[in-house]
Image 1 (cartoon, rainbow, N blue to C red):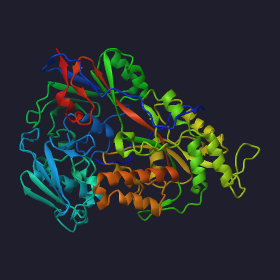
Image 2 (image 1 turned 60 degrees about the horizontal axis):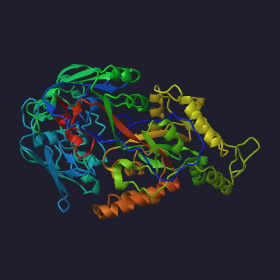
Image 3 (image 1 turned 60 degrees about the vertical axis):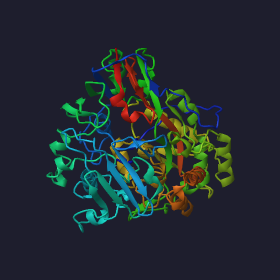
Image 4 (image 1 turned 90 degrees about the vertical axis):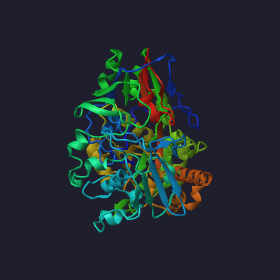
Amino acid sequence: MNKKWVVKSTLALATALMVAGTVKNSVTASKMPLEYSNHKKVKKGGTLHVGYSSSGVFKGVFSDVLRVDGPTSDVSQFGDYNLFRANADHKYTKGGLAEVTFDQAQKTATVKIKQKARWSDGHPVEAKDMAYTYEVVANPATNSGDYDDKVRDVVGVEEYHDGKADKISGIEVKDEKTCVLHFKEMRPEMEFVNSGYIIGKVMPYHYLKDVPFDKLVASDKLQKDPLFYGPFKIKNMVKGESIEWVPNKYYGGKKPNLSKITIEMVDPGHAAAAMQANKYDVLLNEGPSVYSKMKKMSQYVVLGKKEQFYAYVGFKVGHFKNGVNVMDRKTPVQDRALRQAMGYALNMDQITKKFGHGLEYRANTIVPDAFGRYNDHKQKGYPLDLKKANKLLDKAGYKMQKDGYRTLPNGKPFTLRLLAPASSSSSGNRTSVEMYLQQWKKIGVRVKLKNDRLQEFNSYIEQLTNDGKGYDVWLSAWTVTSAPTASIAGTYLPNNPYNLGHFVTKENTKLIESLSSKEAFNTDYQIKQFYKWQAYMNKEAYIVPRYFEYETYVFNKKLTNVSLDPTKSQTLWEDIAFTK
């Protein structure tokens, strides 16, 4: 499943006070261990008790291309495996239940599914499963959020979607285990696992073929009795609350060491106490407040990896009309000097150091540090620099008045409106947002909350995605997929509805398109262009980066063979074991 507003994105608000201080310009992060092994003998069998920290429930639609909530994806990871393996650069490599080869001249990707790949009912995973999954995504009756430009790049997908064809002409089932995908154009980001061009989690055609497309989401075959080709399958489930997983005897990989996994939802406010009482062996989805308590418990080890995530401040400079973003809004934030000054007024280094629990660190661009060399580490981003912020505004003609606020260059007073979501997890949320406003006041920029309040979360999303009125600035964040060209840069193209600031410039579009050009099949060229784009985005400051963060996992020290390394974590649940 690709980056999405509700499912694959996380809206985050800094819950920290703004404090002044001297900062470094470099991007730094606390190092956290990626692996744990106690070097004792492995014990075969045993039940692994997993807690999932969440104040809600999982909806339980067990299809990656149809589910509409993140928790379902997380609680199904023991059986819902990706067919493909990724290397350290998040690109396709060998070793999975399927492998893919690309032919640029023929504009094809050939997927070969291994003979040993089987569903939990014993039926082989077949090429028809991949073809069927594309049909599920492209059929308008399913309303799949994965129907996007990447899927439409497959020949014949649009004709199928529009009802002009019964099948997708560009998907060729060559034999039982071979599927050839014909594309309109070949793009460099296709080489990334989870980029969205090649579906990595397929659906069982033999099991679902008789279910009408418009009935799939609500069907018992996806909600109560789903099939999996990963190492585990569901034995029992309390909908929305807990799942009991047992080994899938037909799994085509290594036999799991565990005899059972149970996972249940636990309220974040009770998670640390539950772990202290040894109720769970593993805790997933813990937040900073839980982490700060867990790291003190000697019976557990906390592992962390850099998350593909960035938090930012956005400036609204236009509208979304007829499927295209248009920069036509008359607003003070059209002025680059004002946007830059507001960026330099922030103090993310001190915030993350003091209140991030060691899990957050200031972002230097909007390309997460987790993407390694794709992030231009020479970029400084927006460290605190009130002197520079004031100089920018002075030079641009913003006059400071006796009340401590500036006027526009034309002499008129102005007030900007900030859109920010209320957070149920932080009672001090209003205070933290007020501190943002105080930092901007220090440079003479008056910013007030829209309607003088934080917005209810669903209303906040509705306003952002449906071009709501009455705000100039907003606070948000994204969790993104494994192809930075598509999931990050592509967001800011003219036709992308998630270009929420609606900024469009010829230079921006040209740079983004260069990332997917034929020349960009040369990785060095692509990275060079990516650096140019990050420099451009930082300069224009339509989106000002705030912070990156670590994703953490808690494991009991009785366990071994635990790794979050990208090249090893794909087999975590079959490798993990208790020790004797």
